[in-house]
Image (cartoon, rainbow, N blue to C red; front, side, top):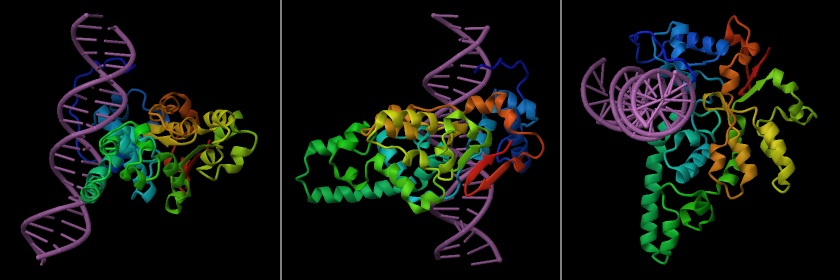
Length: 302
DNA sequence: AAGGCGCCCAACCGCCTTGGT
DNA sequence: AACCAAGGCGGTTGGGCGCCT
């Protein structure tokens, strides 16, 4: 938006699937220069695509840190819980599933979860008709439609009881074996590891564990850890568009009752990746070689 | 083997918001 | 205040693929 309106004539844009060559061009360009203004990306890369298409391709496919493949059980439950709270706010839901894109979640919902929920509700409806003693207020309180989280988590409605509260679910996410192996790709910038925030050894010692930031958080001593959470938690997980999702940790540390601000709180990585600073991390050449993927972690070496 | 069918998912479309002029 | 361009987001589409008959 801070871009100058372009004065060039409308180009004929290519549509459809991206070729590997296009991917390579786009990826190399953004890693070197940052996307800056998306509308200028096709011009600078020589791609016959519009800026929007480039942006989408980057966000949904090329962006480092994307986790691909099937959703694990805990991710699924997180989606269900958040969807119950937020409705079709895919981008907000995606903020709480690092490495997943809103598009991916949306697709998963439409292809699988929606049916699953419908089935569950159908069965629930049958159960309810058998047990008519359930109070009407309870039913209203936790209808399947989007709702306020406080209502949902305090509710005793059976559909809520079936799935644990979000906080514990997110906590479970760290414990679940299938997820633990790759709960989120770790994006680590070697240079950042020397930051003052990280010193004191604790981070360095724990860096192999993607969940250490959360697990290190002591819910009983909020204020100190809240600060630590802020200092550490922001920096190391990429979510949508290379944004560092702070909402996840931030939200947990702020709310046991969970407010919606947790969903909106985030620290944008965008500045690093779209600004000149990012260039320092990546030297030219074959940029693929600058990634070192190990155990689902992605390290950037200077 | 081949045609039909359904599912998955990448990508497009259109609307809304934001920010600059 | 109005206009315009860009970004962001949710809904939708359609191509590709696998399964079934």
